[in-house]
Image (cartoon, rainbow, N blue to C red; front, side, top):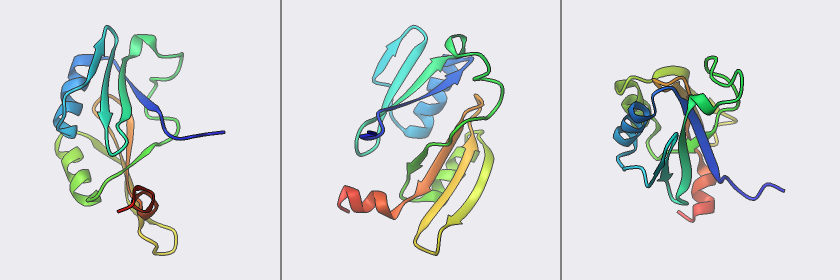
Length: 131
């Protein structure tokens, strides 16, 4: 059974450039580095966000944006999206209100390294967190 999010990893052909870009976006330095892999701890639960040199990607994994979109809860969706676009990300999915007006709002971008990054205003996340 799924117990919770553990790690998400993005592929990149330029590991150091990706690490610098995400350091700027996240406002934190990576906590772990080894050849071919750099990792950040992000958010309330210190989720692992890894960057992997695309030389280690399975065949077809780096042929443009693809796959599932993992959404990160953010408190200010509009400001976060604006910052991502200012840093060079491209809009993938515009701000979209989901459901029946219950406050679930999503958007996603493609980072400068070809990965899809989802952001979301998620009331359920705040309930679980206890805020």
